Image 1 (cartoon, rainbow, N blue to C red):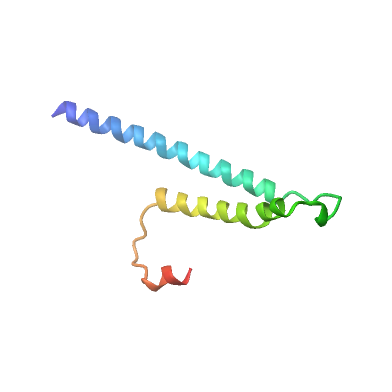
Image 2: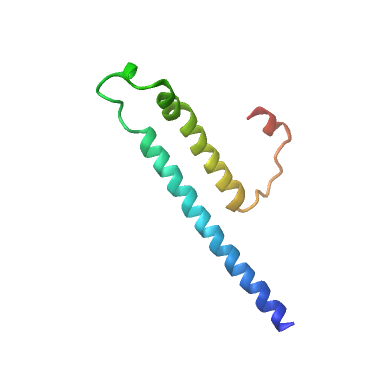
Length: 92
């Protein structure tokens, strides 16, 4: 039985390390996206910025940042003790 306990403890330790690494990565990616999105526009004006770059900055990266934040919350925060009404997921 002692070997089984050691094995379980080893897996828990590795799992905790992976969790910590993922949390750091999520925070880093989120901060990099926030920094890029928050940079001031070019002096050339908005028309000089290609449309795909503007969409990346104003739409896609903020959505990605929010999704990463939600994924981090779902994966690593303690479960919510209260029950969530099923219609909550349909409204968001």
